[in-house]
Image (cartoon, rainbow, N blue to C red):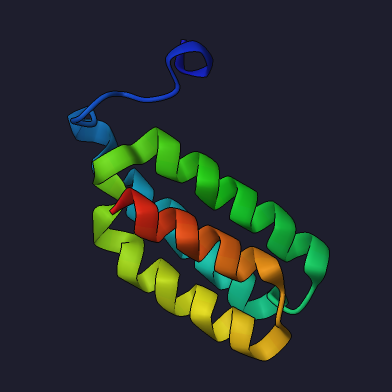
Length: 93
């Protein structure tokens, strides 16, 4: 069903309220360890983009943390994916 509608809407079900923060913790850890590997960064930023669509406004609490990680990653590597996803986050919020 979620593949068709792509989101829960404005409010997540109570059991999913912390899902965005939990997912970001995993991605943040992955990028802190492997953020200098181009393929990992490409896939991780695609996952973040899908998460933005899926979680919608519920992703707002982690947006500043994501932007900070993207800034650190871009400074260290110069990979365009870091700036691309940053632009998507900024345009969403």
